[in-house]
Image (cartoon, rainbow, N blue to C red):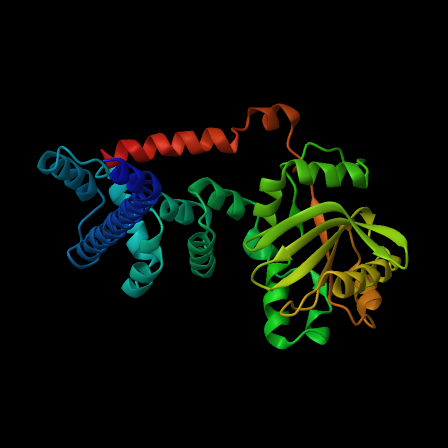
Length: 347
């Protein structure tokens, strides 16, 4: 008995963890499969409504009648209201290609798809945001936030010298990951705040900052110390990018870009390359984030630099009246609201 008890104490916990992980993975696969089938069902219903309205001349009132009949036939199911059926029709009309629905849109929830229909007009943008949602695992509210802050337009907007100083494969990816402007609306800072206040705010809200930077950034520290020839220097922010496989140095400036900033960043990037970079790491990248910039001045400043450097701007809270800003729901409140709606529709 003692031997058996000893065996259990040594192996049971690992065995239990393994089983729990398998059960969890099976649950996730089941939820994803159900979601996929639901989205495909809604697309098919919407397509059938469209076809009959186009070919048989059915009017809009048929949707109200159809909603009543479906509710009567499936009283235990929600999601067949007139409004929901109209969303299905709009969904099928927006995406006539079934393969796109099956391969991309069925991988995100119906609530994500409704947000895409409501918040975007361009098919190209809808598909791009859907793909980014899958890659980054965005909740519906994060997706809405990214749309409303114009992420599609901001991606790849930084002025850089990447194309000239990096290999093409590295250059293309690095350029795509740099935004302009970066949205720091989660910070409660005045436009006159100093650089250290901006840095402290970003560190204090590191989760929001990492979300804004995008997938792959790993935070290594603020005021990160490096020593060159017995002299100490500090980097505003240091990251490692897991997709680019390189260090990323970020320098924050509360004013307009000045040419000397690029020289200072060139020094920082060189120092990180010599001190921190290891075998397998790609060249370190520098990113200067300023309050404003003149594109021509930036291009001139980076023209002869041999280290990869980009320059972007940032924006703080949008100019909403203070009483309206205070009345806006928080991300946490929106998450609770959507979770409640989701649980209602799943019953």
